[in-house]
Amino acid sequence: MIVLWILLGIVVLGALFIWATYNGLVRLNERVNEAWSDITVQLKYRADLIPNVVESVKGYAKHEREAFESVTKARTSIMSAKTVKESAAAEGALEQGLGRIFAIAEAYPELKANTNFIKLQDQLQDTEDKLQAARRFYNNGAKDLNTKIKTFPTNVFARKLGFAVRDYFEVKDRAKIEDAPEVKF
Image 1 (cartoon, rainbow, N blue to C red):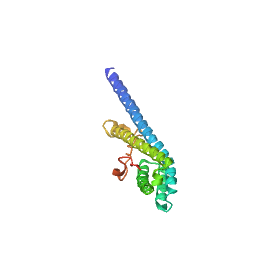
Image 2: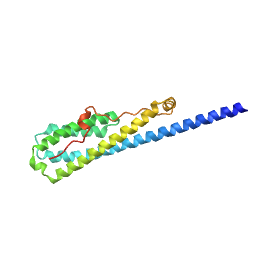
Image 3: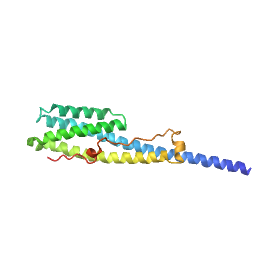
Image 4: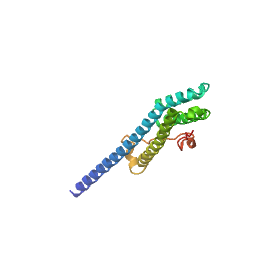
């Protein structure tokens, strides 16, 4: 009879452990999903601002068609990205294109003084700051989830319970996005 109680106790403790492990993984997974959602919201908002910036600059610099096309293409890539890696790659291309647009704008003093353009710059700067914070929050959540999935004894059950390691949001040319682009005119 004592052996039966011991076995029952071991089964109950095992079930409690699996239950707690599963719930912990679900919590972390949802935190990462929430963080990814925050990134996509900011990327969408920025993507919605970009056509306005491009149109503002385009009116002054009609001969810079290639720069405008690269920004438009990068914007489309961000909007159609489905994974973290695709978004990060599109992010790098967009950063380069925006840098070119702002370099073009630098050559036009009338544009730099345009109130609408200044407002767009401020909104874009604010969005870049929010994106940077959202990336850090996402990567922190991914780190916590990945650590839990990879450490013993959770690693024994995590994959069987349907949890997988998440990619970090990393851009190829990290130095270009560590800080939001400076858009002073």
